[in-house]
Amino acid sequence: MLRYLPIVMLVILLAAPFLLERPGEAPEPGARRLVITTPHNEQIRDEFSRAFEEWHLANFDEAVSIDWSTPGGTSEIRKLLKSEYTAALKDGISPGGNSDLLWGGGTYEFTQLSRPITVTRDGEERSTRVLEVMDLDDSYLKGIYGDGLIAGDRLFDTDLRWFGTALSSFGIVYNRDLVSQLGMNEPGTWQDLADPRYLTWLTMVDPGMSGSVTTAFEAILQRRGWIEGWQILRRLAANARSFAGSSTKGPLDVAAGEAAAAICIDFYGRYEAQRTRDAAIRAGLQGADARGRIGYVSPPGETVIDPDPIALLTGAPDPELARRFIEFVLSEDGQSLWQFKVAESGPGPRRFELRRLPIRRSLYRDHFEEFVDKVDPWTIATPVASPNRAMRSFITPMFRGIALDQPELLREAWRAIFEHPAYPKDQGPLVTADDVTDPGLRAMLVAFDRLPVVPGPKDATYDLGDPSQLATVKAGWLRGGYDEDGLWPEPADPAEILRRIIRRQAAADYESIIDGSAAAAAGGDAS
Figure 1 (tube, one colour):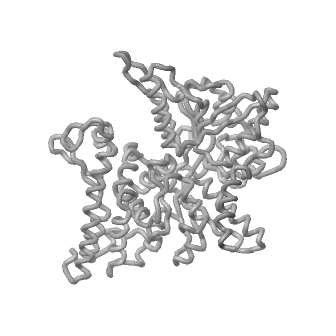
Figure 2: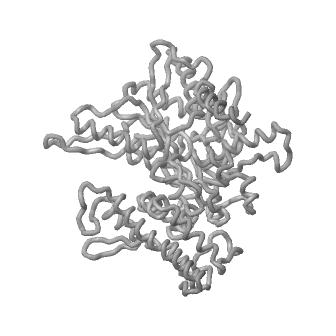
């Protein structure tokens, strides 16, 4: 029987696109077509396609269809759109592409795309923006967003270039069976994942490939502080079995039993938790067993709540239809898709419970009892005290330099630390140099947690361990101010140069830890 397994799996793989199709979803000949670029998953695309097509036919007596463009995560989409619009300016043609809307991701990416793109062609400066302004009435916006804020952050762009459609938080998805087998309690905080017993049992994501993961990392840094935040992130990276290119990979690995835990967006985690819980209930399990294999938790007070925006693209082929889709997504019919239970009729989804938090305030007032998840984000959202806005720019080059570029070296150094005879295994999951007295182990932990020093002009140096210097380094390094010799070797990528410096310094620290451990094992002086 096992010899036929590859054939069976191939048949399932080939059949999957047809199994996911909605009955009767083929568009009518001549139907108007709306093209949406998105990182959203199949479940969201399926439910909103069906619901919008029905809504539009009922309200405008016209058949429409949606084509989804899914070129990658939000960060990749942002780079692609900026490249397309820049190329159009350089070629002297009207900016715009095949897509009408951009939908999904965090506010950071949409804010970046709201900024002007400027090029010089034939001595003349030309500029455009990827996102178009939508002149929506103040009373209409107030009816949806109330005061337009959550924990002091905007729910829509003040220049009306993007509008939040749902709310996202971030947390930990985990496999209860594997966590138990590793001898640990279920995680509740970010630092719980720093426990060395998670070694090779975490799935991490490259923040350079995912805007949502970058936001999750930024939440850790802002909430826990720059120094402690990187101590946590570096240990999580050291415990990783792999580094994925998509935020969806972690929950899938956890559900498949290939990872014990992962950082993820809330609705990915809730979806996997519900799926296994439903399976446990169908199997007749009771009590704790009925919870299912997969759990999800948003660390209390240690996450952020970020809107999931939508925006009209400049040069959209069908801006009228695009505006109607935005109107639908923000309506109560559209918002009910996020949190209502699956039903054969009425508002809400037909096939998939999406488990996302609506952004329209009236749903929490009038329909909260109909929600699958009884979570009111306005009651749990708290502002970040004195946020350092420069932090985010360093996340990708630093994480890649200290972890992604040298995972084996990082893991070997981490193993040398927690296998040291003086390592306090009962100290808690986040052991730092301040927690130990052994001089050798203390030196290893200092080296492990050291953040790099980068050169500046005129022999200046900047310590990235000092968060007050981040804005200066960002203005220099990350905005093209200088390289190691004081001038940029054109056409250098500033973040890439910074990444190489970080990688080199981190490698030297990891090697010193490994060499010190070897010397100690041989009876030498590890300090």
